[in-house]
Length: 75
Length: 241
Length: 247
Image 1 (cartoon, each protein chain N blue to C red):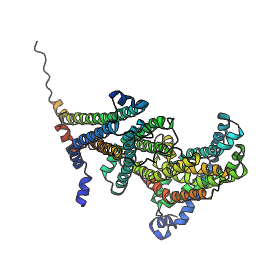
Image 2 (cartoon, each protein chain N blue to C red; image 1 turned 135 degrees about the vertical axis):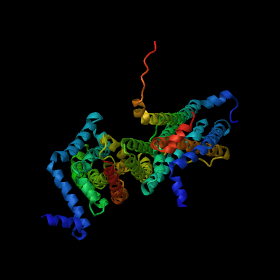
Image 3 (cartoon, each protein chain N blue to C red; image 1 turned 90 degrees about the vertical axis):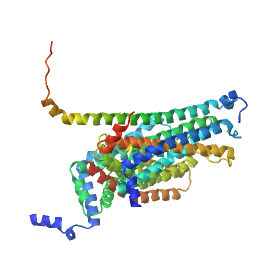
């Protein structure tokens, strides 16, 4: 350990703010890029699934429409 | 008339040599440019106006202008070349000439080189000719003015050549102008550094032959490589539209 | 040989390989990075000249190193795009350019913050900082051009040309910025001239460089997968894959 106490580790003889600011921004930005990339992939997968779900339905819909039976209320 | 036309289309031996084609492209660009003299004048006016802004905006002190003058002139020249680049291929692209150019049997990069040189004659060269007047206005010493013109003479063709790559890449895009500057300015930095650095060295009485030789090397590099890149970029942009 | 090459170019094949590789890349990368940074922050000895502020080196150097090598990788991929028209190469360039820009920004930011205690000022027109700034501009140009051209194929090839033009220019820019810097101000401070580092300093540095490399690999795989999903959305295998994924 290069420091005597945890306090000394945080302060770093006055250089603490600079060092910690750098590490903070580094982790913030890298984390943001990683998180955002993950979310983007999930979003794209969801979007594609919605599209593949809807395509067969759309293909059958004209046929389905012609056989639609209207059920009047029984009341 | 009609038979002649088919002959030129069919037989390769009737098609002109590469040098003739380059000359034809070069002369044609000059001719079409002179039909709209205002377009030629605008970058020059821009150059003068930008240079005028600095004494007004920063300081009219002789000592400041003497020190910053070469930089101001170089930045202004760079910006006005940038401004004129949009015209390099735009008209030919709009009226279809460019597609004909790409279809020519002569190598495209040589025709592109001819076009870039024509662009330099139309914008870079007038800037070089105008520079001494503005150099005196920003109080550059006699020797510095000469060196400045020399650096501009070597440097502006590089600007035109590199710029033609950017112009070809952004051809036919929306907001091409801003994008063009974004792509090209970083590539202009070495020319700017050596252009102003040489003039600064000259004003301090240092020898400048080595730096001028380096700028010459930039020019040679741009002459040999840039036409290939812009020819490739032109083909891409044309296949896009 | 050529079969492997064609396989490499197949998005479907890549997607599978990437999926198996990604957990390894991520967790080994994170472990290495955490080990390197923890060691560097808490256990590495203090620098006798710069004090503790030198501990920024453990993130500054990896970011700067990676920022430059990402551009070179993009240039290689650009060449592959132009010569072999390989789809994946372009997917790589598009996926990786924003990451490269972020890394360049990080290198610049940490360099500037490091400069404050060392040089007494946030920004100095130091040759290395300036050329990193220009590298950032080059990244922005690549991203902007890629976004501006809607046609996929033209966009791929135009970006490839731009990246290659940029990579030819990088050494010229670097050299001229260094020359300019020595002209304008004598190099009083030099970041580069470190006294030969003791092992307690360079081993954690090496660890964090490796860690960041692996994390970059993970990011590249992930973002390439996303790009492939967008582009190949109409193919059967993507549709099946999308259906199979429960999440």
